[in-house]
Length: 118
Image 1 (cartoon, rainbow, N blue to C red):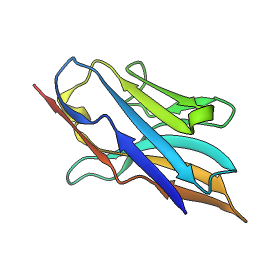
Image 2: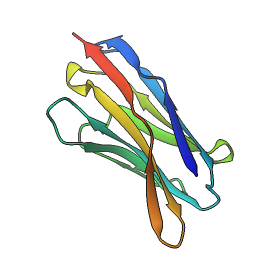
Image 3: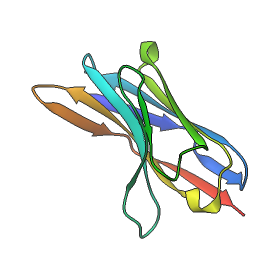
């Protein structure tokens, strides 16, 4: 079993910052990439940021220049530092972890709500 537990969501004013965390536990001996998606009401889920096991990062267009993804390998935790937040960043943010079983399997967290008010 694999569990991903997210925290750090909440309500913030536009221009503010939040830091999301996602801790992986369970059968994660072959943990590979981790990352974040988000989904706003009525919208498709979109990729926000990802980080490989080696620390290489990738960002969606909406996150570039404002969000920073990082991970603590020892804690099996990925973070998303979000600065200069905008109302359009309002969404449920989901973390994921890619774990190598016989094939690469993607596991998802339960989601955390981020609301940015203007």
